[in-house]
Length: 149
Image (cartoon, rainbow, N blue to C red):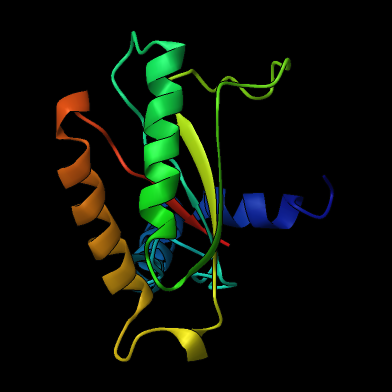
């Protein structure tokens, strides 16, 4: 506390100057912070995606299993895909509260040297979303989430 006493005395002697200096520091800091971005971790591309579509509530176990099998088959039909593993439901743990309506699918891709000419991850995602939504129009609204690993 003794180390701060001179600073406190200075601020109390000239409060307007202290406020002005503080505002200048805030304004100078604004530009770099505004251009910093929202993600501190760059997008990783290690050849694996975790694909997590969600369905409307009230889905039966049989229907969820059928959708999972169709989704895995649809994903596996993409030439760039090496393996697909999907699961529905959750483990007996409080740390994974995934409902039955959430499918978790791990997609492992072939090396990029084996991809079709001109194919990118963004094009793959767009192609997959188009095929998935066109093949599952009768199951209701869905939301797709991709996690790149």
